[in-house]
Image 1 (cartoon, helix red, strand yellow):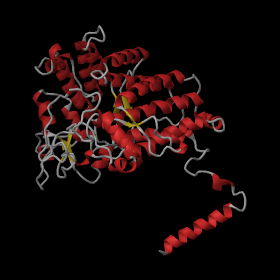
Image 2 (image 1 turned 135 degrees about the horizontal axis):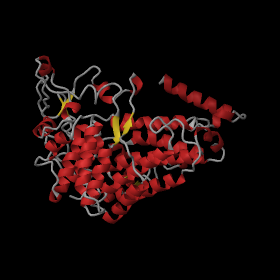
Image 3 (image 1 turned 135 degrees about the vertical axis):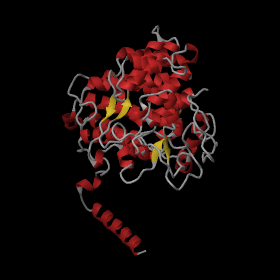
Image 4 (image 1 turned 30 degrees about the horizontal axis):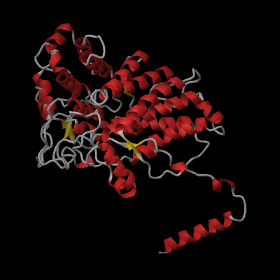
Length: 481
């Protein structure tokens, strides 16, 4: 009670002083400083690729069934399917919007230009915003987009856009951002591309390429046009990796998870599938079990996925690899050449190009092996490739690409789950006693309760765009199967 009275008195005191004269900075919004370095904002937003996308160990890799919990299996049973997205908007998206504003406003653009040309900074911010928004719509479906990040203009309850509308807008946004680059100074604060605007353009085109393949069954005309345009404009030509560091503030998320606990292992399903085909990537994805290594007969063993009552005695299972996956400074992939080649294979299989789809399919598998530092010669690759279930079959292109892409996307949890939802391969395991409302493997995340409570009218409109209830079993726009 005393605290409340004190705060009220202090507020009145400040109000009285402000009425008596000019107190300068009291009228400045401390949450929107005009002197902040735009490079700091860009760096902060770029860190969220590692912190928010690649570091999500509770949804992406779990729902893709690459990784399973050993003891606490609620996440494997989809306890977290109702998830909050507000932090994406108040964090990286707000930072990027501020970069755009500071480089646009006539009063601040000159000061901002010390961090790169105004046009290039705006372009980079637009591209990274599109990257994050694409992830959000692929997780939830319709999302605030056109009205989003307009709090300074009084829009506190933003309307949603349909996923189809967001995709169309992002295609244009990415193209316009690349066209905006002016040949001036590259952006500062960029620890992924080093300020190289040519690499930013490839990143933008790769996002478009990936979105186009994803939209293929929902709007093939748009998807094909955007795919061919993105490839012609130039996509990545090397794996794009996020550079984690050997220090606590910027370390690999799997290293963080295993700092004091051993909660996660590769799933039994993934291990057994890869073992059955003699896949050499398995030894780079996982460590041998501790007992087998100590006995001099190293073996990789997966954990059963989603047990309702797991053993209280931790099983002898294989953790993510200590060198390639969970070393403190082990990089994780943002986009890879395997993804590019799989996309090219699918485009050819769909008849979008005159390429031989098998050539790109083979190249995709090899690119994945290269990414994971697998040593092989032609004989070793051919022995793997010639097996039934691996060798190209034009009548089963979706099944083959679906499985191989699922394996190759290890370490890219959101992307792996999304591609499984789109292609429906491989057959994943339904956990015991799932906690999802659908009782099945989720097809989307459920909107946070705050949206229904605080943004109710727009939430209800979003459900109309979604085309079904706000449940995990409702298909997204591009998920037509």
